[in-house]
Image (tube, rainbow, N blue to C red; front, side, top):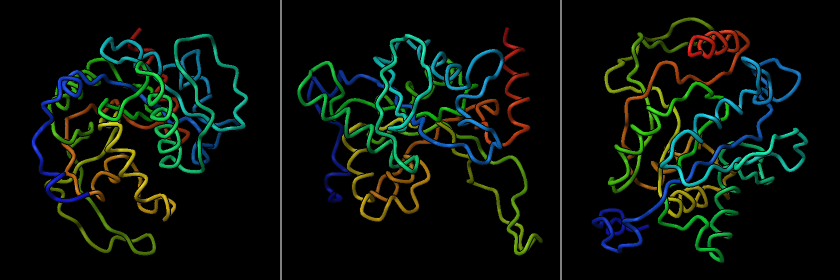
Length: 250
């Protein structure tokens, strides 16, 4: 992609200005760090699987045209009837799952005007961030809908940051201008797909989220302040904290 393409002004095409917002949830991981028997996204929290809390939050946002979940080709989880579309094309990594899901959606959109088009927005959200709220999702959409690039929810780093060697502190790093990335991350479907495709031959090396793929493509995603509660359930103690927080909302 040339610098002139990246620096070009927003499109004046009426169709592009009417771009819709779709949510894509990669849900093909094994969650090995969680220490659970089944993939962590299917573990019960506050009475239902973690991913169902996540999807309920996304589906509460009326500005989201549709929510799509990308699961493993061998996924056998019993899903309840819902309006959520499931694509069984998940990959070995999060980046591969997002890329495969986007490829499938754009291929569908090429034949169906109701499907995802290249100019539409895609909000990629972690299945394990089950404490996301409608307020935060709408805040991201408000901040990015008229942006040339798009952006992500994130938190300014509040703590002292240490580097380590062999389990001992080797340096204290400046925390100014450092943020903790969260999701959703919101980018144009076609641009994000191209950014991921450019890294596919290298097995998406270094792509830890959608923003990193956009950065490698030469873009500077916008940072939108998220919430400390929007953490990623990763380790065993996180499940109890998520259950407490979900319970407090009731």
